[in-house]
Each structure stands twice: as structure tokens, then as C-alpha cells.
Length: 299
Image 1 (tube, rainbow, N blue to C red):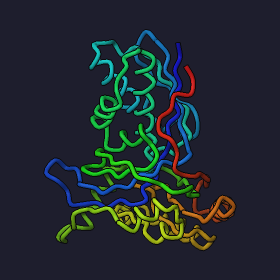
Image 2 (cartoon, helix red, strand yellow):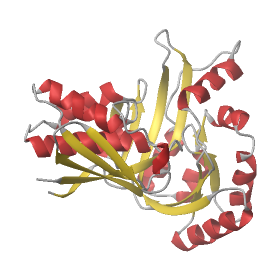
Image 3 (spheres, rainbow, N blue to C red):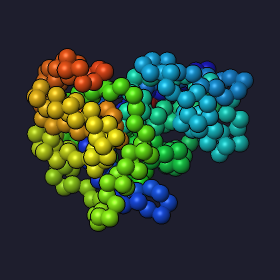
Image 4 (cartoon, one colour):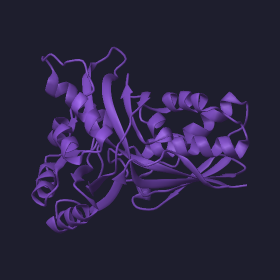
């Protein structure tokens, strides 16, 4: 038997970051929106646990037990006293190390696929509990749609979205380490009063009503100054997309992918073409949101 699960990328339409906690994490008000760029994770019984990967930048994906997909299989197997003997194949389409939770998506996808393959019948709360152990973004990759993440992002509250939003994602050369970006955030905010993170009522209302113009005015990413500090060239990409007609631009999560909100699908294609021609990014991808979470597409 083989099970295939499709999992979406995400964009943080608001990423409010509090000061560093004693455990090294940061409290967040993290408004997730799943977008229509997907990885596919396929699991097949095997003599041992192994991971393979294909697609753009597949050579940058770890194929050992540090991969979140492998860790997900190990965690689920441990709960049910099984041996995690499975071949996990990841067909990548989400940018690698790009601030769009591609690794987290693979973890969520492998978890759901192994649950179906092994017939362990885990409930959604049980799966979300394992997701939270794997990483802060993994629970949202499982459920998709739109949600507010609090704590370090793993505590999710679903949000209503009143319509489709159209995006362009400019993919940069190379990646950015999420821990490095948070470390730079701590350096840049050292000696200042970092306020507790709170979700923006205006942003939540814009999502609820499906108002792209209002959402554009409310987008915020507290990690953007840190990402730009580590990768100053991203400023040129943000400027190119804005000049091409995007309603708003921001660094996606910890970067280096940059996200551009547009008024409609036609505008998204135009902005993507301009970004590609600008030479400020490696490629530009068009997607709409919200998108469903991890979904079994074949068994």
C-alpha cells in the first residue's frame, strides 16, 4: 500500500513577535494563511526508515532522521509501539528554507500519511499534539485554511476568511535560517521594550470580509527588519514588486521568500512577470489563498 498526502505552504499575514522567553522561544501572535503551493508526501512500507526527495532545490533537503517527515514517522510509531519502517518520498514544490513552512508541511504530510498507512486511527487532537512536538508551524500545516497561532505558534484558533486572496511569492537564491533570523531580531531589539504580541483587529476583519485592500494595509511581520539585516538584497525585491503594482509586500515568515498581495489573479500574473524580469529574485510563483490543509490524495 502507498499513501500520498498533499500539504500547503503558508504565508504569515501578521507575525507579531514578543521578547525571548527563558526557553529560548518567543511568544507570537501569528496569523497563518495557507496558500496554494504544495508538497506531496508519499509513504510506502520499507525494510527501514528512509527519505528521498525530488523537485526544485531537492538537494538542500536533509534525507536523514533530522528531516521533519522522518521525525513525524518516528513520533507516531513510538506512540503505537511500531517500528517506523517506511520509505518517505517528498515531491517538493514549496521553496526550501524560504519562510513558507515547507519542512513543517512535510512533517504534517508524513504524519497523516503514516497514520493512514499503519491504520493507527489517530484523532485530530492526537495528530496536532504530535505536530506541536515537531515544531511551531507543523500544526497549522496539518489543518490549513487560516488560523491565529499563539504561544510559540502551535496553539491554533481557526479564522474565517470571506474570499480568495491572490499572491505572488518571489523566491530568492539560498535560504535563511529561522534561528538566525530570531537571533538577529533579539540583537536588533536588545535594550528596548518588546510589547506582548497581539493579533490586529483590523487584519482579522479584513480576512473575515475578504477585503484585499484592507488586508494590504494591515500586513505586518516583526521579523522583517531582521531578515533584511541578514539579507539586504531583499529590499530590492520588495521594491520591485511594489513598483509593479502589488497592493503590499512583506518578507514571508523568516524569509528569504518575499510575498506580494495583489488585487486579483490578473494582477498577480503581471507582478510575477515584472519580478522575474527585474533580476531581483530567482523566480516568482503565483498562488491563491486560503488553501486546505494536509489532504490524502491517493491510497
